[in-house]
Image (cartoon, rainbow, N blue to C red; front, side, top):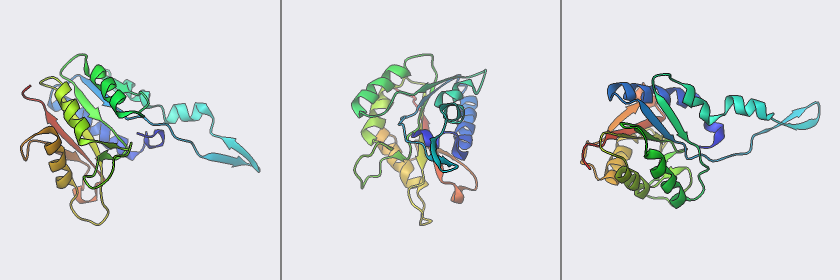
Length: 199
C-alpha cells in the first residue's frame, strides 16, 4: 500500500470489517500485511517559494503503524517492511505469521489480486503468493484479502474476483466469503476471507 492511500475512507470500511470479523471468529490478533511502498508527497507553494510537506504532518496523518493503537482488546501488528522483492517479502510474511493464534492475516495491497489477463505489478498480490501464504497459516486462522473494484462499467466484479481468490487457495466454489460496503452495487472495495479448517 502506498503511503498516500493510508487514512482514507476505505480504511474506515477496512477496519470496520476486520473488527467485526475478529468478534465473529473470536480472534484477538490481526496481522496487517501492508505491502508498503513509499511515494513522493506533493509539493507546496507558499508566496512563490516551493516547500515540502513537513515530516511531522505526514507522520501524524500517514503513519501506517498508528493502527496498532486502535484497540485495547486486540493485538494489531503491521508488517511494514518495504515491499520491493516478492520472494523476500513472502519470507517476511511467513515469519510475521508466527505468533499467537488464532489470527487474522490481512493482505492489504493497493489494488488486490492480480488480474488474470495482465502482467504482475507491485500493487497486486499474485495467485501463487496467496497459495503460499495459505499454506503457511495454521488451522483456525483467517485469511482476508483487500480487493479494489476492477472495472467501472457497472458489471459485476465481486463474484469473479471471489472465484479467482477461491481458485488460488484451492477452495471449492463458495468456499470464501465476502464483506463489502453498502450499497453493494456502489462499493468500490471488497474483502474476501476464509478460515483455514484443515491443514
